[in-house]
Length: 261
Image (spheres, rainbow, N blue to C red):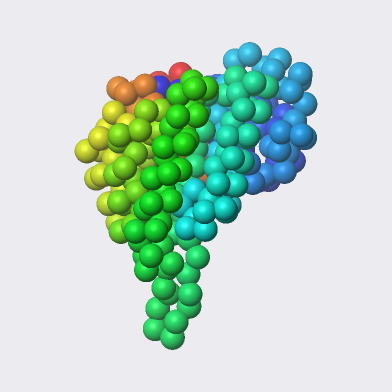
């Protein structure tokens, strides 16, 4: 297992994150491609590559949409994913990438929200299948892993997740906080194919809010750390602020007395 942290929105530079990562004796930082200081053109690669003990993974932008049923949009998003991966692989030898499967566009009706991917499910799943195939072939060629994260799960998204098992170098990111908040369907599906879980986002859920620190909420933290340790999984402690991250690591080390590094 390797234990890491997300890039924090309260910081203004990647260097601040690296300093905290070293202070907490963590193994890696998951760069967030929705934060401007993580944009490749803004990174001082020579400086970043001096930190030999800190590995980088990449959380690709949440705006990327590989299931878009507009074929031209879908192709552009897949190409952008490939371009981003190539930059980070050759600039910093990044091997692991995280990507959301999104619920997509919806229409607000008087009595409900109507999601386009649900109404046109066959078109959505056809788009997903094409994107998975293209990204799998690319990931194999580049020797990288692309992991797909459960955020909110709809029937169509669960069907899409089921397709991942047949594609080389495509894997699951099990987000356990999202899973607790949204009902548990994703974890059940992922665990049926547990060898496909290569990445985990660990944060707590207190009954109302997720992304809370590990000592506050209902999550069985040790259970998931044990799973990560037994299966050589990269685990991000995905809280949003420095103090919450420090509190979470303290909880792991002192309350659980769990040696993670």
